[in-house]
Image (tube, rainbow over all chains, first blue to last red):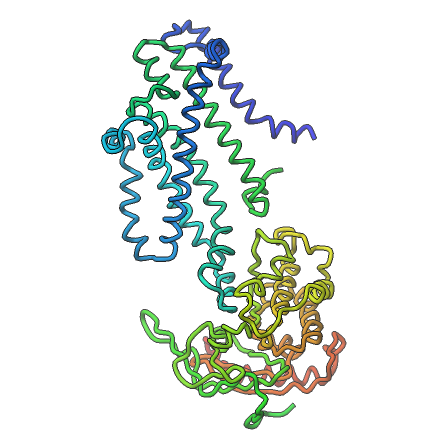
Length: 256
Length: 274
C-alpha cells in the first residue's frame, strides 16, 4: 500500500526536489536576482498578478491548441495516404525530413511575410512544428497491424476502408499518442515563436519578449514557469486520455 | 484403412485439379506445389499433413482465394476461389490467434461476420448460437474480457469460435494448435470436434502432427516437399464421435502407424543418416 503511494508521488518528489535544490543554491551562492531568481520569488510574482499571466497564458494555449489540432488532422490524413502508397511515401519522406530538421525559427519570418501578422502566422507556425511527428508516427502506426488480422479481413473480402477503420486506425493509436506527447512541446515552441515574430500583442511569447526588452528578469522567469506548467498539464491530460483509450495496450500495463 | 482410388463425387464442395504454384525467389524459383488433385465433400473433415515446406499452407490459401495459382484449376462450390471468398464462404482459423487487442472476446468473435456485411449468402450464427459456442469452449465467463486477460489456449479458443461464428460452409484451419503446449493441444482437438459436430461445416485442416490428423480427420492428405505435392491419401475409418479413449484403441495406432510410414517414405531427411 505505502509502496503504491510512494510510486505515485515519485514525480512530485522529483520536481519539488529540483526546485528546492535551485532555491538552496541561489541562496547559498548569493546569486543576484537578475541572473536567476529563486523559485519561491517566481511563484510569488505570478501570485501577485495572476490576471496578467492568465491573460497571456490563455492566448498562448489557444494558439498552441489550434495549431496542434490542425497538425493532428492534416498529419493523420497524410499518414493514411503514405501508409497505403509506398511510392508516395518514398517520394515524400525526404521532404518530411527536411521540414523536420530545418529549424522552425529560420522560416518563421517567411511565414509571417506570407500570411501577415496576428493570429494566423502563429497557428501556421505551430501547425508546421507539430506536423512531422504526427505524419511519421501515424504512418508507422497504420502499418503496425498484425498481418494475420489483415489476412483474416481479406479472407472475407473486406474493403480497404473497412480494414483502415477497424484495424489500422486502432492499431495506430499507441503511436499517435506518442506523437501527441512530442507535439505538445513543439506546439508551445511554435506558439511562442509565432508571437515573437508575428508582432503579437498578447501571449506568453509576447510577455517573454517585453521582459527581455525591459530587463524584467522576474517576468521572464514567471512566463517560463507558466509555459512549463501549461506543457506539464497538457502531458498529464494526454496521459489520462491515453490510459482510458489504450487500456488494452501493453504500454499501459507496465506499472506495479 | 484403404488407399484412395480416383475420388469421384459430384457433391464435392472443393475441387482442385492439377494445381501448381511456383514462387519466384531472388536466387531461384521454388516449386511450392506440383500437380495437386484434391476433392473435399460437403461436411467432410480433411487434413493436409506434412512437414514444413510441403506447400500445405499454400494449398489452403489457394483454395481460400488468398494466393493465386499458376496452373490447373480450383473450384469452390462451382465457382472460383476469389468469387467464393467474396461470398464469404470461408472461415479462416490462422496459426496465431490474431485477436484485436482493443476488442472484447464477444467483439473479436464477431469480427469476421461484421466485415463486408450483407454480402454473404450464408448468415452468421445468431448471438444465442455464438454464446452457446463460447460456452462449449468454456469461455462464457470471459465474453467481456480483453485478449490480454486470456491465456494462449483461451485466445486460440476465441479464434476457433470466431471461425465458426461466421457461419461459412468451409472452414480453413492453418495449424491452429501448433503454438500451444501439448496438454492444451490435446483438449483443443476434442473441442474442435464438438464445434464441428454442432455446425456440420466442411473443414480443411493443415497440420504437421500425425496424431492430430488421425484424431480429427475423415481423410488425410499426406504431403511431401520439393516439389510440394500430395503423396498419399488415406481414409481414417475410425468411429465418430471421437473421444480421448480412442487414442488407446489399436485401430487408432494402426492409422497413426500408416500415416507415419507414408511420411517417412516421401520425406527424405535433409542429412543422410550415418
